[in-house]
Each structure stands twice: as structure tokens, then as C-alpha cells.
Image (cartoon, rainbow, N blue to C red; front, side, top):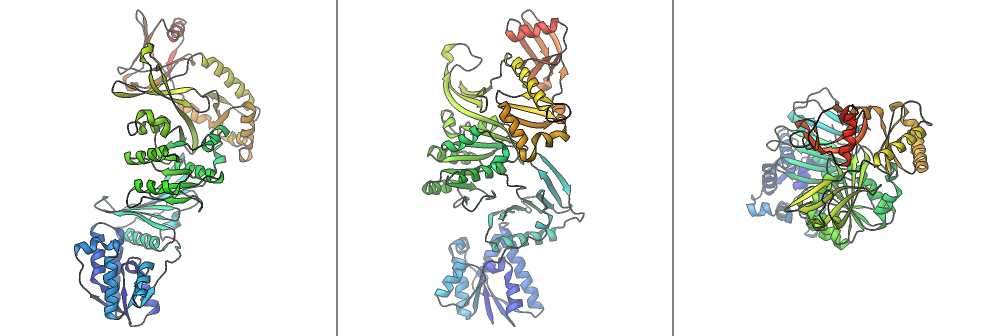
Length: 599
């Protein structure tokens, strides 16, 4: 029996299995057009081309062993025909060869099969198989494994744990070689092409990115990388939004009208996990939710359609989404200038947008937008920034716009448009963003010293209240009027949280504040202070902090008690006028012989 396979079945490796199981004394006729297409793909570093050529080599081995007859026929296509392969030129040449040879066309491309049937060509269609397991990859994914790392010449490693508590471990003592990794890569691409929920998101120049079920797999080869490498990652958990213990005000803010929200955090902090929770929460509140992702790796219900770039452009995707008219779009991730422009365009068109972006601080996420969007438009594009750290919501900013004299300026004629970045829970302004000359200034606005005594009194009250539930030391830090952090022994955390977090929610309702629970070890590690050199000039107090702290903001303490906050100059000094309120307090502490420290 004569068989003419097309590119699809050669790439997914099913010619051999079909011949071995179903056909006796088969003659496999491979079109030169297929060879040219695979060669072009392999020369571009595409994994599909490499996998297809490896399949041809294995068919040659079967031919030499007498298991089949392998021949190559047909004309080699022109460069233009290869370039138009996506439009069906190569498939057309394969169909013509099958008709000419009176052979059966073997394909796993449904379009190819239907056209062949319409033209009266004998065709055997191999539908996509069930995806099964990816050999040598999925077996490493235990319950707490977030990613698996395979590289030539090294032992397989895995990153396990939860966001904020991840560690890298060797998971196999066997050192990987290039042939093994090529086989793994071939298996991955083969499974992805067959799987109903598998997608090859990117395949170019020595790099291939696939999405298979909940796994995002990156294959890197020379010359793009200096060695063959495979990295597979997946979400560790799907966490409902209620588990983040967000305030009702924040939940209402997200759902009361279409918002522009940035979810920010460092890599591995849990941004995408929170984005999934927000998407599901919005869907459950009867909003139409879609996603824009490249690659598509958010784990969301089937009710939420996941889009990637259309014809290589997310701008095209945005145009389509405006026709679909979603209430909210989850954009994972917003990183480059075109991404921010697409985000802004959709937001200004009236679509609720939740963007995921990398940032070390909440304010950094906003700064990434500044310069890419006209300054006066920023609050209309983004009105909420949620910063995620170690899998928890660490900070929420409310972005508003006003006209005022910026903090630190006194002349009324210096009034200008100012973006105020406020703590969402307390309403206190923490940063002001405005134009000064030709530059955009992002200026911290610190709390006044008068707030500290009241906060210290509140902290002592909360410490006494928490002490009723646990044994051991309790330290409370008041972060704002609506939010506090308590530090307790590690062993006492389960007791303060209670089953399913019920106890901590009860305490929060009684006290009327949001409580973050951390270990005493974290506080002791982060609250180091050092004594500093102090001197007086005619009208100033001079504190030497050190040039290594240049530009940093530090708290000034007297015998461990907070006095004020100041920024270290470029020369390592803080100079404070004596006739200011902070200067008078500091001068009294110095003349009382108290130990002055910076923390």
C-alpha cells in the first residue's frame, strides 16, 4: 500500500506507529516539498523542523531494516512557495503527489483531510490523541513543585514551595546529556501538537515556548543559548480571592465600576495567582471576563476565554476584544511600551482592565506607566495599584488627580496638576507625582511626627488584645490608620489565624483594622539600627549616616524611640534646621544625652 504523509504527521511522529500497527509492506512516499519545509523550519531553529527531520531519519532506519519502503518524490518548492506554507502551498503539493501516485494521503490536519476528500483523494485522517503525560517532565511535578529545570551537563533541579518561600533542589542525580534533552523536547512538541489544550506559542531562532495543560515549557537551544535547556513551570495553587483577606472596600472598588488596576510584584511573588483569583471573582459577580496572554498560562474556568496575540500583535487582539465587548480584561503581562499603550487604549475605550506587571514596589508599577502615557491621563488609565509580596497583598494604592502646591513647596504660584498616590486603606498620601520643568518628579510624602505617639498607644492596645489568644511575645507595628502588622512567635501563628482564618477575621472585625501576621524573626531581622555621628552647626544639626546610604530614607531614633524621618544626602549626611519642629525635638534628645540611631 502506498502512503503519502504530510508535514503534520511527520512532525508529530505518527507515521512510524501507523505503518507498524496498520499497514504491511507499505511504501512511504515523502514529498520533496515536505522535506524543504522541514529544512526551512530547522534552519530557523524551530523545534517542529528538527522533530520532523528526526522522524525522517527514523523512517530511513526502518527502510534499511526492510520494515517499509521509503522514497522521496516530487519537485522541490520555490522560496516563495515555502514562505507561503501557512497559506496551504505545501499542502497543495502533497495532495497533488498523493493523487498522482494513487496513494493514500496520511494527515492529522483536519483542513487538509477535508480538501483531499472533496477532490476525491484517498485520505486517512489521524485525529489528535489524548494528551497523556509528558515523559521526563510531569513525573518531576510533585504537589509543591513550581518549576522543573533541565540543562545539558547538569542534574535536574526543581523549585518547590509557595510564593515567598521557594527553594531550588536537585531532584535527580543523573546528569542530563544533549541527546536526552532533544528527545524530551521532541516528546513535548509532539504531545503539544496532539493535545486539544496544547499550543505552540512561540517557535523561532533556537527558542520554543509551548503551553500544555497548566504547564508553560520553554525550550532553548544553541545558538540562542549556550547549551540545551528546558524549563517547565506551572502554578502551585489556585487560590480564591476570599483567602487573600481583602477588605470589603477593596472588593467593592473592583466590582462597583470598570477600573484600571495594576497587579504588581517581583517574579514568583504570586501576581498571576492573584490575577486568576480576581478573574474568577469578577466572573462570579456576573461580569464578562476575557484574558490577553502571551503565553496563555492563567488557570481560569472555561467561562473565561483566553486570547493571545493575533497575527503576532496584541494590538490586533485588542481590536478584536473591543468587538467582543468584555466588561473586564485580564492582561498578563504588561511589560513593554506597546503593552502599556494597548492597556491604556482599552482602558480609555471603557473596558475594565487588570494588568499584571513586574515591580519591586507598588510605586514602581506606576512609574513604569509614566512616560508611556501622558502624565495627566495616568489616573484615568490606572486608578488602583495592588502590590503582591510573598503571595500576599502587601500594599494597595489609590491613584487620584488634583491641582495643588506639591508637598515641600510653599509658594502658591507653584500650584500645578498633581497625581496623588494614596494608601487605599488609610487615605494618607504617600507619593506625589508632578512635572517640574522638563522632568517628572515622584516625591515621597511622609507622615508627620505627631501621628507616632497616637500610633504607639494604639500598638500597645492591640498587643494586649492579641496577647489574650497566644502565648509569648507580641509586637505590633501600626502601618496606617486602617492596617497593622503583628509579629508573634512562629509556633503561635496557627493559633492566631484559627481554623480557615476565622479567628484573625474575628479580631479584625473587633478592632476595625486589617492585620498582617508575621514572625518575630522577620521583625528582628528587618529592624536593625546603628548609632550615628551627630554634630551641631550655627543653625543646623548634622548627622553622618554614611555615603553607602546616599539617597535612602531612614528613621531617626533616640534611645529606640522614633523622632523623625529624613533622606540621606549624596555625601552621606543629613542636615536638619534647628528651628523646625523635627529639629527642635532632635536637639532636645541630643542635649539630654540620648543615643541617636538610624534605622
